[in-house]
Length: 448
Image (cartoon, rainbow, N blue to C red; front, side, top):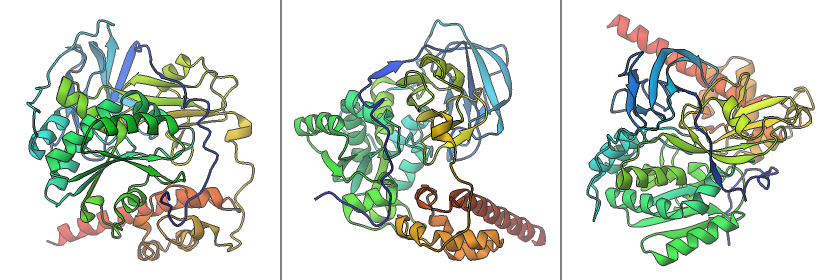
């Protein structure tokens, strides 16, 4: 029997249009834009100057090793600007702009370690840090930071997350089908570094082709097992995943290492293999380009820093002017108002919708206290009470309702018959609480 969990929803997955399409390598753009913050942590600083010639894979920016990941050029060419540019977050962030010379002259800066038997956690952390690897499933947390923190815990289980439960997105599905050997290799490298005894690759049951390919690999090799999950959103959330595989519940405000588990995305595992075995830094990623407004939806291997407009052009452009464009999935993605922003490390999809699909059919109404939001919340929270306190600006009350445990999955907004902006209100509440904490710390420092 497949694992199920309380709450969650069953949206129309809309994956049929791309899940059978093999990954295509997109043409390199004339210019790449590399924002200096592409991960959770401190911003990087440029280590190149305008006018410098850079090579493919050359490190062009770096930050605090404890909480950042360096950025590498995804083309060879000349640095033409270091200036604020629009990013997918809607902010203008200092970015390195490189003009492509289309020679792809490689830097080959990474040192390939001896991984015959086992790489210690600190050595593997150094390798993935030098390669600029972050969580590619959406978290974008520097993998080196995550590895070093987990090495201090008693990690018994490594879980490779292949759930990919968001509608439309099939990038990870294609990676599992086409790069299963790399996923297995990356998983075993991580498991051996952390001393884990169990390794699982977790996949939703509807991904039959990926399951078949991974079963072939895991049957042929040793030390890693396939774990098939019930198809449900948000099955790929770390808390649901850990509970499904290990039977253990991550405590409120806790993380997976608290229960002896370490979770990484399938694409992250493949990137680890490429860094260790080939000395390749993270300069590309697979992106699903889909939605009703896209002429020819595809799964593209895209160079990091490629403007979104170039990606849509590679898919034949639009069948009609899109009403809505998102970076990321339909549930948790961020709406875009421009096509100029570039793909970054955490971008797994760009979607464009026609008016009849991307437009809200109803305006926000009034809560009728139906309780649906609470029934679908996988974190067992009370969304309507958090929303009510947000409207009354009672942010401390939201804190007491454990709003920090909200993963912003969007299940509550999806199911709400009144179309209340629940998730956006929770994001705003968290921002207000962070501002309050920052003000309190500043006041305390001034007193001291």
